[in-house]
Amino acid sequence: MNQLKITGGIRAGMANSTWPFATLKATKDKLVLKAFMIGKFSFSKEDIISIEPYYDIPIIGRGIKINHKVIQYKGKIIFWSFKNPTEIINDIMLLGFLDNTR
Image (tube, rainbow, N blue to C red):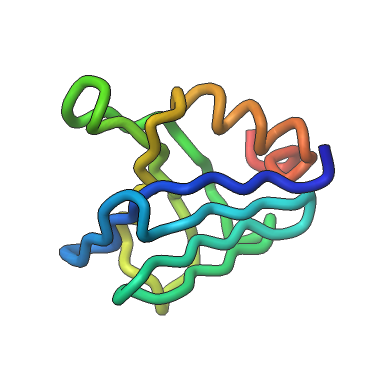
């Protein structure tokens, strides 16, 4: 697998874009979140502190929280998906993107 692409939703600060109006794309060098009406968040490996599972409401409120160092982006960025958050993180790790953050 060279690239990961998942449809979902994004919450960045107080802004929210629900499923299916957001995408997560990842390669070994870059992770990009795009959301209708919110914009684009692009991260290099060096920008990421950690990525962790995030749960709010069972089944529909689960995702991954991106802990990052990019000053221009809202502090709390969450990507929501129907896919298991641990599986998303594992898929990102398999690409080699998280090799320096854990």
